[in-house]
Length: 297
Ligand code: GUN
Image (tube, rainbow, N blue to C red; front, side):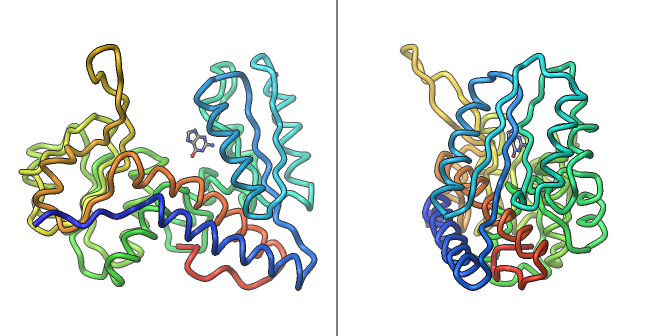
């Protein structure tokens, strides 16, 4: 039987609606408007598209958006001074420094200069440590979006075998920690894993975040498994055209899986929705208010 398609675009819209209604209440009952500051250094075209989209969606859910566009030659001292200013600005509840940064800037140093309470990317070493030890953290947006979709589809994930393919700090490692937090038995596999197909065949949940187009084939998937495809790869479609594919070979995998996220329209739209959710969460925590239900890990 063909897999159920998990519609990330529709799910992201419901997340944004929840965020927007909570923001309305915060404004009316507490006189607080959550604010997100996004810092872009340089003119990377893909980053410009992302930042524009983040700003637009931030405003659409009723939050304040503060965009800081800096020249590609900005010094580390000037960037750190801006972050210090944002750290101390009570109207700013979330700070995101768009990556990648130009090569003369030390990304780790820059990310770790953000106030962890405002680190809506969840990249600060304090948040990584809090998540790794099962404490309340700011959680990276893409794995948070994957977790929300899995919880929505399955209810409880307790006792399930989860295989995460990919060991990045942005997706693979935090995803594994989140699944552990929901009592899955978790394996982190990657491009060097021996007999990766056999490892993936054990999984009730597969999260593919390895960055290799259509690497995971249907014959790797256990019958009825849930497949979350984080990959976004642009490949040649012939006649001078390109198309987007995931890390999973959709056609063969969807014939075996119980449920699957498509690319595009799966995990992708959830990332910015979770950034908005994280900004709201950071705002609530900063003001000692109850956190939004269903929007945190
Ligand atoms: N560049 C691409 N994706 C991301 C993201 O999620 N956060 C940041 N800060 N930069 C990115």
